[in-house]
Length: 271
Image (cartoon, rainbow, N blue to C red; front, side, top):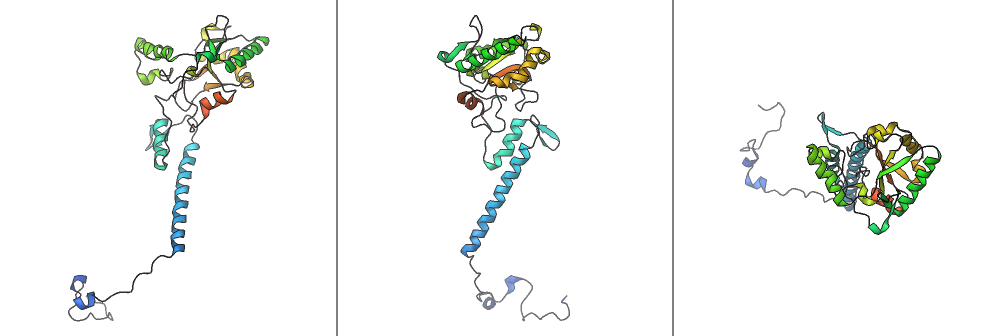
């Protein structure tokens, strides 16, 4: 039904475009104006601004997560590594080359190692060895006896610590990786990492209870003065178990680059 006052259609013209008489359909229409150069500039600047805002917003959302937290999708916790990979994939950023939450490290050359125990069984790189010796002497002067129980390890050493003990204890690889790095992925390979004990309480060696010793308390208050830091605090990003006994040297350019250069916010990884 036509509304009153509507213009009448020419005779023979239906409501369908295909019924338009050929003569009318071939009538040329005015060409559409081409976009000006300034219009294209405005378009590209707008597109670039939107892309930058999208990337910045995504990264800001990830960086504001509490350290050690997981990403969430639909209320289901997502492992941090998978969540980070998913968040950064749209902007072309890849997460580090992780294996079960650990970063790869090269072995320190034997020629660069120096002993930090009387029998020479525990060694660190020269710079780390000098600072650890100074640190243990300073602690001893205050009545605290720090003991190094593990330092540099070869990949072969780590082979047993990971696969050998895993088999002995019947652990899954993911479970073993929470307490020990796979071979080739241990901070101990670098010659900068050391496991420390308090000789007054040997029962706490390599145990979380080490945090209750005078040795750990002294390290928390003084280790930074000797360029040592705790590698695996509670709720660390990669999910490695809390290790109050495991400290690493970051007192020169090479050691700092070993642990931090070209790392994303998941940089503090390795074991």
